[in-house]
Image (cartoon, rainbow, N blue to C red; front, side):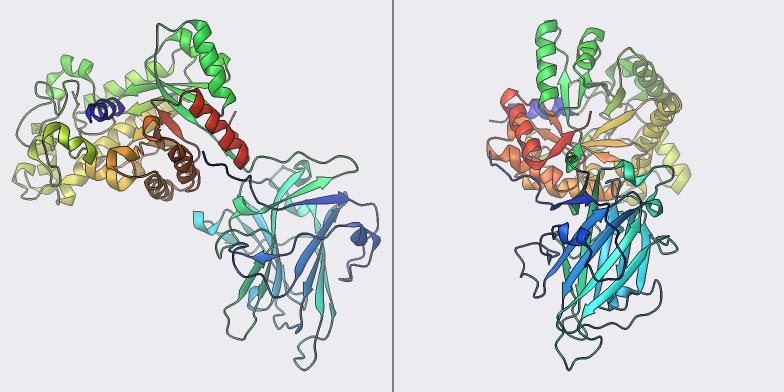
Length: 581
């Protein structure tokens, strides 16, 4: 897949960014006794510094809140103590039922993610009456998370006091105060004790109804960039400090970056070792090798990198030579065995033959068990391109704005018989094959069945499997009959080679966003970047587009060179991203 695109493409005639702006609060250990009465008068509160002022949830570029809000925090062996000051000229409150929707009143909200992974985090809200709503979130709503209202923060102590009068619009109030003691024992995750985590992700929110009927204001400690507090990756950090001990800040994000690499047998051990050390030092976590050489894999592993075997799947001249009847057939009746599309090495197998999936799965399992192999990587796991990237059309003097029969596969006798058995129709009689969803799905499902066979075979042996795929599930279905959004894999590498589509680096972000939305949290997305196409500032823009749209890391093809690796390293440091090790 990548080789064809690169060869055909060759035939055709740094910006610095600030580190994470998430706020940090150093909560100090206290031995002072704190009475939970809402008054914030104890010496522990006087010693605790106030947080930064709350801002609009969308960010500091939006109008500043008209009323001040700050929090303070301290802790001891049993509790995290939170004290909030909410400046208010008209203190109101009406909701009295536990776990009623508190934010229909003006309220104060605490969000707690002790383990910093956005899973099983806690929410505690209260109004000026001291009415509590608390719940557990399994993950954010944007990731289809569900709230668990039956969860109660057992042992929570909460009190409210006010400088003013409640529900009296005829006078002018000054502020109301919230004081709470949150027991650590209520925040366990199974057998995991939150006290073991010295840095938590937290956020605080104030919902304020400036006028009856809204809209409400959302003022927060750590802005999320949109009117949605449930973005734990944007929350602030709370460090649990004890005397002179101040915990180290964790990375804002752990990313895993990869390189597709062909073997270079002429390289010496010393050259390979230096290359791998450089890649590791600059933020690469794994190499995808096209082929296998035990010596090179060993050197890769010794440098601290993962070594994965990149192996072609459906484009297999070796198997087709032994079994010419396995070749895919185009709408003109031509087989890839003796008339391949585009280039001579395009010798694709038909996925409908059960022997094909068996042979491929056995081959992948054999390779997965070779020494130093950490995982297998599918490539060419598709049909031949029914539509090439637009930048390549000129190489063949073709216009593929409509599907051409010589590039439309598979019309072999077996596929025709199976489709006719399912639908009662011969695909050769389909008038508009590019619009016939049953015929399209038949071929999508055929490829998917091969992937599932390989996946099940390797999973039974405890082996890791990933795949190089076309950019975005929508494009993949149209261009190569590849429905990878419905595959069971845990890692996908959409080849977002923007130059092949006459697109700028921002296009990468749109493609990544679609891919991430498709797989959700069940799999990682590592968009492939064609390094030679990313000149100058475009390299950083491509990283922004990938990471900024939810990629778990990036993968590079045909590079990067040492200068590109140094740029990657600087980018990761500037954004406080840590490579997965």
